[in-house]
Image (cartoon, rainbow, N blue to C red; front, side):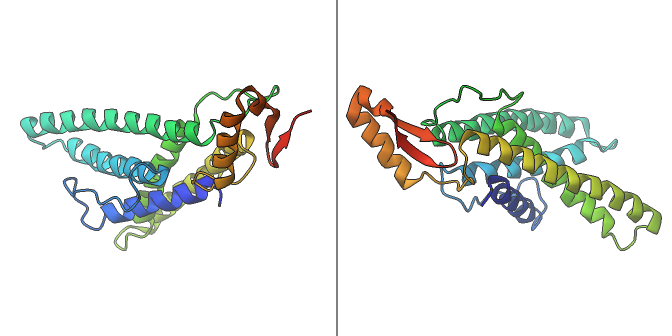
Amino acid sequence: MAFTEKANKIFNQAINDYHVKDNIDTPINNPFEEGSIENRLYLKCWIDTVQWHFEDIIRDPQIDPAEALLLKRRIDKSNQDRTDLVEQIDSCFREIYKDVKVQDDARINTESPAWAVDRLSILALKIYHMKEQVERPEASAEHKAKCQAKLDVLLEQQVDLSTAIDQLLEDIWGYDFDGETRTVDVHVRTLRQKLGDAGEQIETVRGVGYRMSR
C-alpha cells in the first residue's frame, strides 16, 4: 500500500470521528498504537480539524472579547502542537529510513516528507467541508455548481500531492511504504552492527533489497 493511500484513509477517519459530535472540546480517542506513525497521522489530522473549527468560531463578529482571547490562546497552542507533530512524523521517517545509503545522484527537495503530509492533512479537511457545501439540500444550484468546481480542483490537488509524496518516499526507499519496520531490515541492521566495519559491505539497493559489495 502506498503511504498516502494509508495516510488519506487515516485523515478521513479522524475527520469523520471528530464530526460525530462536532465539538471542539470532544476528547480524542486515537485508535492507533502509541508511537506508531499511524497514531501520529491520526493525531495530526484531529488537531487540524479542531483548529479548523476554532477559526470558524473566532471569525464570528459577535464573539465575546474575553472568549476570543481564550480561543486565541488555544489556537496558538494548537499551532505549536501541529508543528511538534510534523517533527515527530519526520522522526518516524528518519527511523524507518536510517539504514538507507544516500545515493550519489540523490535529489534535494525543498521540504521534508512530513511537511508535505501536513499539507495533505489540511487538504483532506478542505475536501470534507467543500463536499458538505456541494451536498447541502437547501443550497442553490448556482452555489452547488461553484462548490463542485472547487471540489474538483481540490481532489485533483490531492492526487497530485499524494503522487509527489509517494514518489519522494520511493526515491528514498524504492518500495511501497508499509508503515512498519520490516523484519529483514531489522536482521540486516543487527548483522551490520555485529560485523563492525565489515558490515559496510552489505549495501542497500533501492527497489531490490541488499547485496554484498566486492
